[in-house]
Amino acid sequence: MIEGKLDDHFPLVIWQTGSGTQTNMNANEVIANRAIELLGGALGSKKPIHPNDDVNRSQSSNDVFPTAMHVAEVEQIEGRLRPALEALRGVLDAKAHEFADIVKIAARIFRTPPR
Image (cartoon, rainbow, N blue to C red):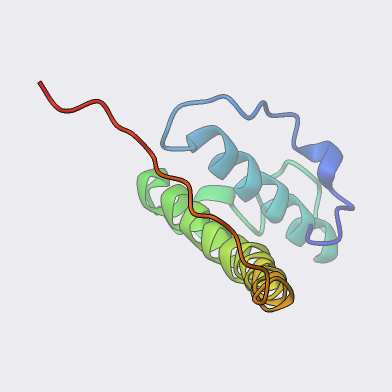
């Protein structure tokens, strides 16, 4: 699944209820069927691996889906956002040093007084 080889087994739309039951149960069924296939069973038979009993272990989608989303968020923040912000900070710091000796006239901002 991680390599994307089973993507065609996820015909779901991104727009669904907040608990993610559709995605969670679809993932459980795909995982169960792959395990059944590896164990030599008949696809869709739910034997010897059952999607809810063995894969999901009767967990609530209200627990599983938000947790998966939080893990994905942290991975994106740590893997993409933080490095991008650090690179931006470096570029801005370099520009600040580059222009440090340039004298400029400060601009005054006039604001409307509060009513």
